[in-house]
Image (cartoon, rainbow, N blue to C red; front, side):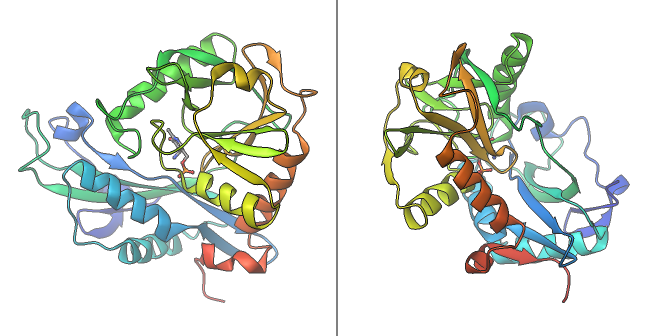
Length: 306
Ligand code: PMP
């Protein structure tokens, strides 16, 4: 059970971290947030937070989009988070949620001239969606929010109405998740994860100009594919039907981690099992996040003193 939150400038009991029903962001979705994972390494009795500074860098970039300028640096938000996690004393995997919001209680519809606050809380978290064999997907009838309407590159609270419509439609239609297209009919990403496919040994993903969140896991996977697996990388527009004939495909994200896709619109990918490239990337990713690969310790922040 979560005991604490960083709220209005200090760490305090979670019960004190409340906002009014009149809160502007509660009414209009004018906030932005982050999603960060902590991984518990039982052998080392250590909790490792993955790419915390990079997550806070993107968080502050999202805040800039919604006209919320903070004096915080990514480094001091990371330090506050470590302090918070030490007080929670998690000895299991956890999820960290920073959120920036307009703190005013007003019905004004705007982003400017409002008071911005940051809150941070954490909670225990295992798998979002336990599906070791891969997830079934269907192409959503909803289209991805466009940069000309609600920018997808930032993690903006209001844009998760789009993700929620997409996710519920997929679930109610019997799929585990969705493939989401842009207004022009090309692929963007999943409901809450970036998308990668493998064709003829190349790793292909949509560019950051395809209305996707600029994912930290996406960046991680591309670096590993290039440096460790010597794969050729193609960041380019993807057609819907390319996914039908892909050798492999997977979602990647902090929550999703590396999530193999077993089918798209009832077409089985490969033999329906996670493919060799997906499996190799996933294995390495999990070794890294749990602190079992010394070469990538720069990406990990240990929470407890050794
Ligand atoms: N796209 C969307 C829409 C998401 O919500 C997420 C999860 N944050 C991602 C992609 C993956 O981003 P990251 O790897 O930074 O978690």
